[in-house]
Image 1: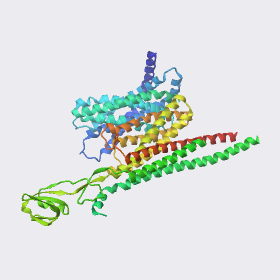
Image 2: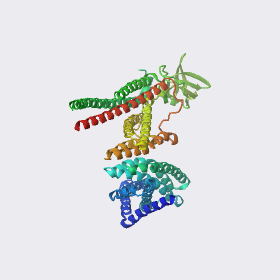
Image 3: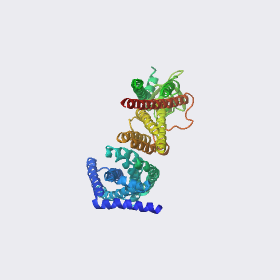
Length: 234
Length: 62
Length: 308
């Protein structure tokens, strides 16, 4: 049974990835959106002069870009499923509901991580040139990106499954997603800030933030996993 | 008033309008909400009476 | 139907009387705790007297600032105590019980100024008898909403959905009142209207989540689906309640935390009155809204009967 679920999970993930590789719609839209965010950041910071350390605000700006691009992606990934009647077909097929949840969340996680991997170097190139970076602690960044994205993709998949069935999809998703994401965002920004600033203190701040995010992930993923069945069946 | 007392109260009494305002706001909010709920309830009760009388008349006629 | 409204009215009157009692107790009976000190020259009996503060004065001319205070000046190996009349670089004049004494400033060695120190009454604390019960009830009603949401998902009984929605409405009322009173208190106590402080931030998030619940419900067409979505979201949103409650105990925060056994006498009684009264008010509002929903259902029934 477990292997059957595993096969189903892999098949659904492959479906999402193959579709994406063919159309490249999600990566293109999310990647370009995050690039546009960088332009907005430049405008926002253009009047700030050069008296501030970009490393102090880098973490917040990064996660701001991630949360808005993730909302874009979450919305699209479920709108596709709904418009093409794919979700109904999945519900009719003998697939366990948790498998659907993990497959959708896994797909969203992969796209989110891909966009983050693109955004991070671009952000560093545009905003962090000439600042002192501690590469030892920067190496910790992928860890918080992965752990934070797991929470975002998991909770986001649940909320996007709700919001695609509402009138005013994007707004409802934002209204549900951002307040629920607050604890994760705070922990993730803390950890990312610690990793970017570096040093022994920065690393200890990083692990504190990581602790918060891991705790949030465990609680919220369990809740999302338990509640997805009701949402998808309604 | 005693000058010393005046000095003391000038230092501390800047707080009180805000605290009293908070109380007033809370009372006003409660009274307004409950009042509106009661008014709606009354209206619905009257509507129901009329409707039920109509239902009774209809049933008597049948 | 009658019985629900009767119960609601009894709870409403009880809650009104008790919260009014708490209000009177808080303002006219309970004492005012101190928040820092006020130092003044004289001694006033009607203000609680905290005892003298001492300040050594090393130069005679600084004494000029303390005219009218009781001072004890040491000069030439002797000490003179009395009310300071005047002081300058040449001489210090002190009024003692047996006439004025003038001390040559050159002989001046040290002086102690006796003033009075009064506790600074913390009027802002009065918000405590109201703001804390309202905030507590907002958490409790939210807990009921989450409980009814779980019951609804388990049984699919529409009554639980109604109870969940009405509980969330009551939560919204109490959350709004908590925010309103809290913001005014913040201005009184901290001098700013808002501070991004852990408790305020998490409570603000809670407010947004409760609003989001209604945004979600209003944008779903299908009734069955609306009920399920509302239930699921209120369970998810409830996770913020323990976070908001415990955050002041976990993270350094400016927001006051109630410690057990910190209150006694009139303060404690007023606080408990406020709490019971607020529970009764919360119950009354909940029952009033439930009665309204039931009336609406009966009206719908009567209308469908008439339309046949």
